[in-house]
Image (tube, rainbow, N blue to C red; front, side, top):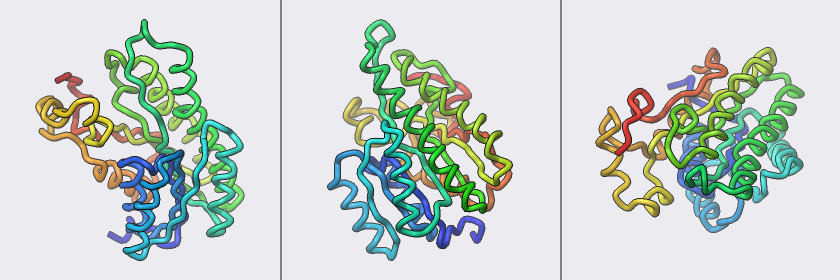
Length: 256
């Protein structure tokens, strides 16, 4: 569909060393966008992703950085502009997950979660928005949040707080940036089949599919397709919104 085409748009995607970020990169590149793939460590994973995208004719470069550092977010944006002369899309997907009971959550866990999930996303959006405003052509900013930011889930108190913060961040920044033609939204990620979840629970898929109304867990491509819509021309009037990609789970919140 024409409104999903992103020919010559420049996009930054963070957290590309894992499956969801990689799927986002492939979807955006497939729609014609130039991609700067940000990651922290796991360079071989990103090298493999770059080869895959370039094999299909996609334009992609990588940038390894620690986004808990404010200046690193500005350097990331600067790199995209140096490569392609502009920035149109930021998919702030980088984040960490900590599963721990409230009474066992320590200061280091808390600080690490806030440093990347909230601080990194906030200043990444600020750096991107300043560049987009200077260009005068609008833009798209998307955060990766979670069902744990909408529904309370045991042992995810600190993590859920950061994800709830991203939902509110999308609302607030959507209000502040909308006048510049910049929309800010979030993807509410539900149970998704990826390496980390399978390591935590080898029966992850079987456990979750029984409590999700659509009868299956999400795949990284489901998130990537939703991202593609939110950054497209078809989503011009979607702003300050969190699009839940959870098969309807948050409507019932049944646990396996």
